[in-house]
Amino acid sequence: MEILRKYGEATTVVFPLIDRGTLDLVASVTIASGDIKIMKDEGAFANTDTASFVDETLGMYSIPLTDAEMTAARIVIRIVDTATKEWEDQTVIITTYGNASAQHTDTVWDEARADHTTAGSFGEGVIVEDFSTTGKASLKTQIHDDVTEGSLTFRQVTRIILSSAAGLLSGSDNSNPRFRDQANTKDRIVASTSTDGRSAVNVDGT
Image (cartoon, rainbow, N blue to C red; front, side):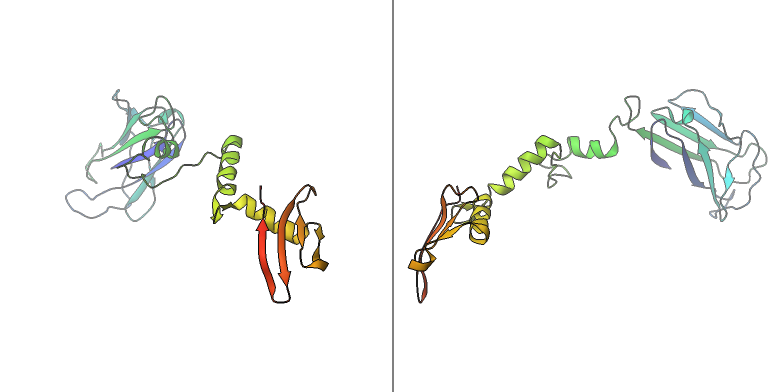
């Protein structure tokens, strides 16, 4: 079995043991020194820092690995009964990530972002947005300058709505209401009204 773990970070590996000569999981095996060994980056096998593995019951076992044991690109855990065989030989292969010396140098998220969003890749439809200060400013600009209706952008529509809701108003008594911007420098809305309602509306969201 092969698993992925972070480089240089202590972890616990869980694995099954199969009864010798059968296809069944085997529980409550006798564990002796040397039954579990570790190889790092194709070096020599050595005993793990923890001399024996833990019986998790129902045929499942675990072994804790230290930070030092996890400092390799490729790690092989060999679980072999050195006495009378109670279980089938087992190996666990660990590949690491998140360090320049790891098998996968990027973290999992960085790897997904960096190289797999081009056409034809599994992440082609993923949009990776920059949420730094610059990225946020760019995103806000894109949203505000998106056309909402006709030629009016979301930014302009917001200004017009604000003028209608909170801008100074004049001309409402002569059927020609004018709504001002917040700085009172221009008319945002100029309308012509009658008893039947509005007959014309001119807006300026710039």
